[in-house]
Image 1 (cartoon, one colour):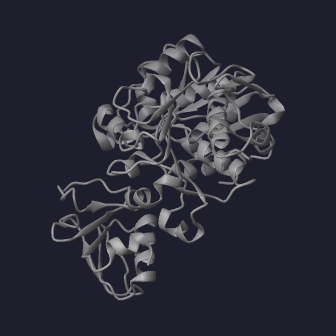
Image 2 (image 1 turned 90 degrees about the vertical axis):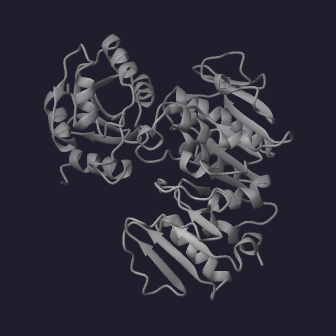
Length: 430
């Protein structure tokens, strides 16, 4: 019987949250323990008619789970009821406990999906490798693909790390910026959750992290990475990756990934792949066939005599600034979304000192930026109007960039839906 199942067998189990990961947990338990009863707890009622041996707790009191042995918390659930810490568990925690020794865990405010996907793309050329986690693949759904020789690339969100008591053998902390303050309340609490990527590592483990984030509390081997610090173990310039004093020339035709921030991610991926037996030359060849993920500085195409770029993934100031640096010919910038309480001064300062021809503001955070900008801008009601306005005001053959510097929630289901709508509006499909 798998070790994770051994831990769950004959326990009173509650699955807290029944989204993608909660459903995955139920399926995994039911595969090996077909008759063991579990309780599903969710604020919204769920149709359980096709499930077996389940009890339910729905509604306002769904988090009152003190009488259970194991509470399998889904990452998206915000705890409003104090639960016994020794009973609180998750897919991530159990997975790292049993498979952490063969896992490369990747986190950071931005860049983790691209970094994890690129690393998986390179490693799978010559090694058994699986990609799972926050990328959209629950860990328990991938367990039957893993043996002792499999390399596991695990994209880890702050929510998955928040209650993790184990860390991966190789951890990556790409960067930290203000984000998810609506959930954590303070930046310090958000940082504390992210730091679980290294907090429980041992001396023979390794953490790759942005140089400024290194500190004396880390017990494992530290590899410092930086976009700007030439003294870091891993650093970059316009055309070269520097990895432990090894220089790797990166030509524009070597990758479809745009921007300095992506070269930083590439350098870290090359270092990690080399640790697992993949040469820099092999990584460079594999990089050429990597297709960038959607909604991340994605070139949509030329429509209405304009070149359109979709950077809907951008939810903070720093990613919009990096997008503008990567696309210096941007003529029109579309900004705004949910106001999470982050400080928009850095973005406003950048735009005030690097003015572009047209700035179009929308939604709640657009109203915040409107008070900070000293350059001309246009305020619109929503994304559809923003696209129509861009079609009218942008110069012929210029670049139009959606890089909202704000979350999509409240207006769209997620950043993917926002990006999809943007592309439909561009092509007059909606």
